[in-house]
Length: 447
Image (cartoon, rainbow, N blue to C red; front, top):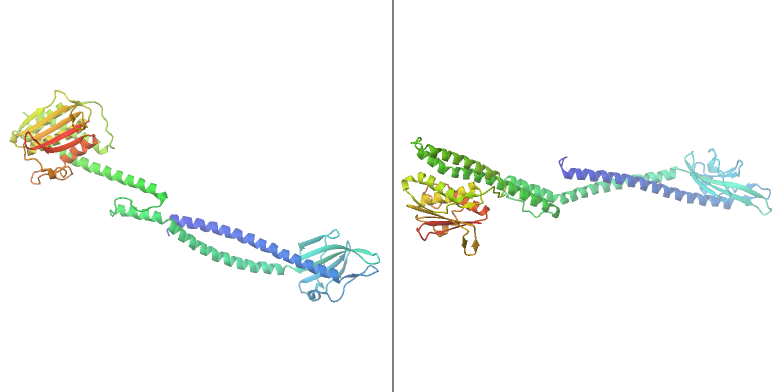
């Protein structure tokens, strides 16, 4: 078990609490047992006092007579540990038991008649003092203090035996409780070990997210961790896609520049235009990579102007195909979208149309167009007279890396970019066969 682990800290904390509790319990129980033993001794000594009182006889002349044979044999045995004394009140000792021969006399305290006092003397003996007033048949009255003492060794030995037994059982109980506590800690912290194990599996790639049956208190943590993991993966995927999109977006300007390289002086304006366009593409893709999904617009963009610029650029890229562009757009088409997004959508669709067409590409822009149950502010339609795309492949080519024809040069990114952008803009992308030209027709609905 590691020193920094929660299990170790909880076990040490529980151990310290148990040790403190058992130490306090031992002190309290030992003190309680000592008081109980002293109380039992007091009652025992009280019985001996009464036995001395019953054996004593006050003579007519006022002298106290004690018989040689007492009810308790220990009073007659020297060093037996049980000793008896009788004092005349406020005067000297008048009798001691044979067992007390040679012992120091314990002076009794001042007591009122009928009072009793139990205490531990400086000679390490427990003593019970009892004051009485005795009057015989002839009217002689005397005041006596009867004292019975017993060595403290009797109580000490009992307390010592109890202490040893108590410590043995408390130690055994403490060890047993520590093992129980360890088992409970392992059981209680098992959900944490499970979630740590699942996180390690995610780190090694064996899992994609936390999907275990976690404790109620950890469900919120697991959910937040899953959200964090998904966010980081989406962020990483966005950067990967942005790099792929950047490479794909730069293809057309690079193709134009490649075509202008042979006659740079003639196409100087075109070269500058494409360099500016490439700079805008890089800036746009970097912003997309760092974006968090919010869509903000700073003003309107003329979609008609964007279409015309793209068609002019593509005419130079596909000059060998001598493509006819049938552009049917309003004089101005102001829309509230990012210019980069419109270039990506229209550029990719028109580039694909040029790539697959035989001779003709048709572009149409309609504003405030209503079609069926859909109500969109902008409708962009791009058609070509190429072979078209089989209906079964329409859904597939919207995935990254999938191309309609593997024999045609490309990366399978353009249509995935269009699909993602249209979805983020709240629009709709539809593909079908063109009735007018016979090839493919893509319709982009933007709200």
